[in-house]
Length: 366
Image (tube, rainbow, N blue to C red; front, side, top):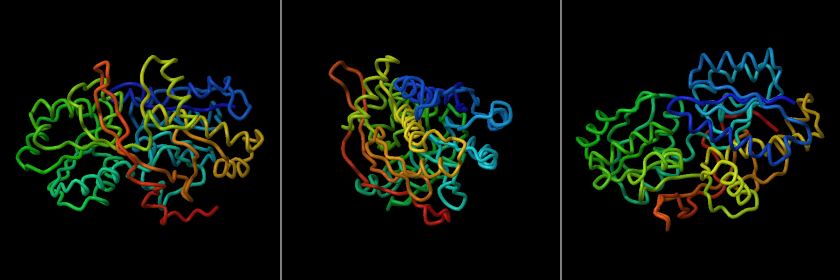
């Protein structure tokens, strides 16, 4: 069988795609190069964080390579640009990251499955946390694309204070002097920022250098405070709270094996992105096995993807009616290790078996 893996492997967002790829390949390697008992060929291509490039890649996957499954996309604008073509071809797309609200609600599709989260979810956790901390005013920052809109919508859904301003930045922006000056002038009680990968590294560094970290608490989703960002940011992240559906310390057999094998194979601490790539491969393995290898039988694969019993890096996994996860969400905090390095540590559970806000708009039935 063939799997088309298209992801962002260059530019400011490269670390995210690389971790997803490495997590997926690790699961495949640990499974002897097979998924569901079938030998698997993975065709990896860089989308360069460009929707036009992604369209060309997906067209090649579908027409020339005739792949059986597609996965790998990091950014929601990329996924929305190619999703229609994938679904029209009746090819299953397994999302290891992007979870736009459209595909959770009115545009849900039987050929789309997300093993990660819906775009709003991690931001809902931090909106709830900000309300608990009595931060009565906030400024919100996110890139100007679908996941950015979903992010701030999620935060506001659970936040009870006043949003002084929503600041939307360019998706490839690395200089935030103007935005930080604006935050300083507004004097909020807290700032919430969703800026993944290299964007988050730049923002957090500049925020700390401007002297705001000690005066205006910075709140982040896990994407903007994960190990890839810690590696590039350093001390500026120390003490910052962030949200996630996954943590290094989650105590289940799959996660213990994943964390140990990832560090052994790649000599670095895994991120939530790597865990999601690993889980995407595990889902395929379980579903293909449940369908007895009949990957060309779309009805059999649809049933298997929906109902296969498997354990993710977060524990036993289940899909909602819209093919998004129903799962727990956690608060983490960046702390100093005994060796002086920085790492995310689990603080506690915020939401238990949480579902996204759009499932009621999905007309798909099981």
